[in-house]
Length: 228
Image (cartoon, rainbow, N blue to C red; front, side, top):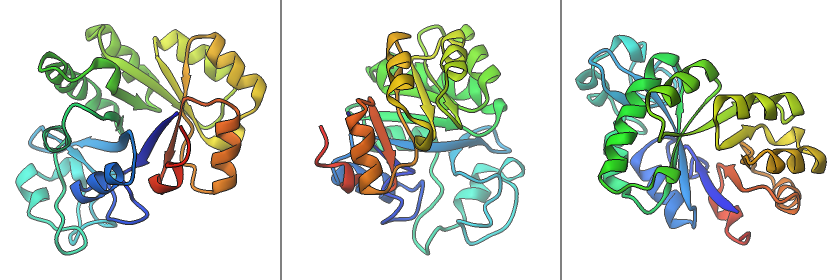
């Protein structure tokens, strides 16, 4: 079972920062989940919200700020907003990356960058583009056939499983509360890996591990450490 740090070890360090990602790996995570937006100057920056207001010492819409303007801001006094490429370069090719696009306009740019890193030796199956923006995922997969994609959903159902297969996804990522043994079996029969989010309670972690999910995304990667 893959142990995936949600926005890094976000229960212990500022979310979506290099420190948070490195902390997650130090705590035993096999990989990280992160969020990306396209900024005004065209780069992919790692931040969850549409604005910087909640996490950084400034205000403004990410899409209306340049990379220079974004990286002049600080998070928790000492962290900065990284680019996706910076995260890849810092953490290397040995871990899994679940790269969530928050808007459709980031899909092709993310896919192109991920392909470039695949050509440099990053395993394709460890660079996974995920989103609720399913049409954007489908389009990215059509343009970059080697791209690994994962479809996010609020619930795990037969309908979501069928939709994920139609998209050409390798994984399905529904919220953890909707899981049943039947649906997990159906997803596996369909050839999909099942990765729930965001699972923080020890009882929920144990229940999902018992259902034979393929990975768990958590703010507390240390709580996943005892699960193989």
